[in-house]
Image (cartoon, rainbow, N blue to C red; front, side, top):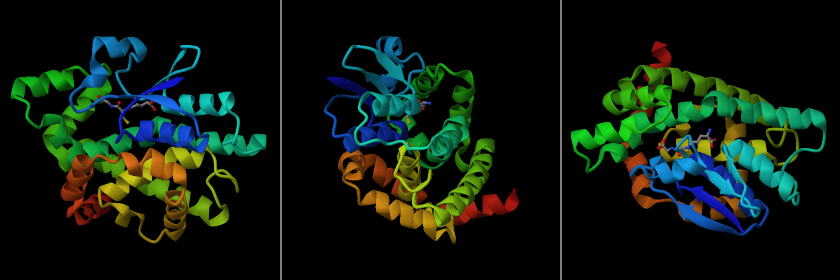
Length: 265
Ligand SMILES: N[C@@H](CCC(=O)N[C@@H](CS)C(=O)NCC(=O)O)C(=O)O
């Protein structure tokens, strides 16, 4: 059976779970608590040296990391229903969406989530020394520096405004595409739509959908996706109240401040 090392609230794990649900695949659940650093143990790093979720162990015992690669693997290994468009051109379009997500949208989402809410969950109940150890255990030095800065400075971190500006561009690009096409890569639901779903959901949880402004096509796309059974199984049924409430509470009054950040830049 497929085995997934994941976390209920992790955006990268959510997209893999949507693919598993779309394809009606059974999988063994290995849930890791990220705020407790369970992805940073030496044992887990033997599976995923980057100390992150998700990691898929295939039916043959092969280990696959990187959520975009995992979703493509699942679509190759279990072709029905297909989650790629049918023409080479539209497959290229699909990959341009997932590429930008891997290049900077994912990190920008981590920046926004940590600045507003997750920094509280990462530090809760830990002494100063434990907090330092928790952040020091991040293997990638660039990510370590960014998350540490966000833990200390929240929305005043130098990383925050850059991330918000990046989302402005993303939302504009998505709106233009979704005004013309039903889905991100043409007129069939694909891995591109699946990839972006958890990220828009994260903005929803942080009370930041107002950032979309006048972009009705994205909201319409998001509504359609939320009606799919895969969204219910992969995201809704697994929401952790404690984290959702933290995001709602910390995000409650944040929108005007975020809009000011965009104005200032
Ligand atoms: N590029 C990786 C990113 C994985 C990633 O950043 N995962 C986050 C959750 S969405 C994580 O495990 N964070 C744990 C930590 O930083 O300790 C992928 O797409 O799989």
